[in-house]
Length: 121
Image (tube, rainbow, N blue to C red; front, side, top):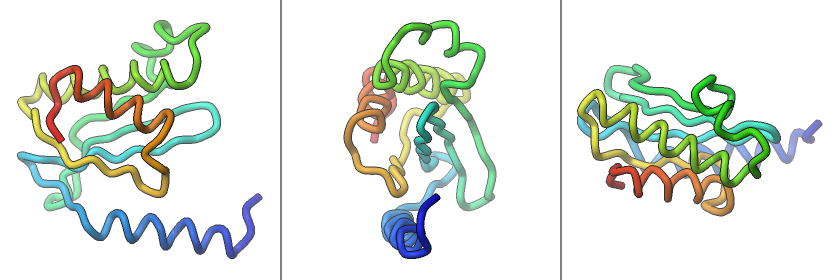
């Protein structure tokens, strides 16, 4: 378990990143959370406090595709899925929110795959 000091540093970093960005209906915030096993992403409209679309490696659509793949490749599949779901509701521009995670590895792979699938950020 993380110490109180570590949790405080994480919280501070997250607030710093999120303080600079906000999502709207036309351009939602694409928030990423990375755990040890899975990666989760959701498109959030901050003005109305609603979630527009969700995707993760725990979704049934992605779980079948990522069998035997590495975590970075699985994150790419999640990026493609969230882009597909957002395009289907008419959203093609987003604001990327990496949260407390560095733009590296799985987070970068997710963002690159979403861009390749048509999202602009």
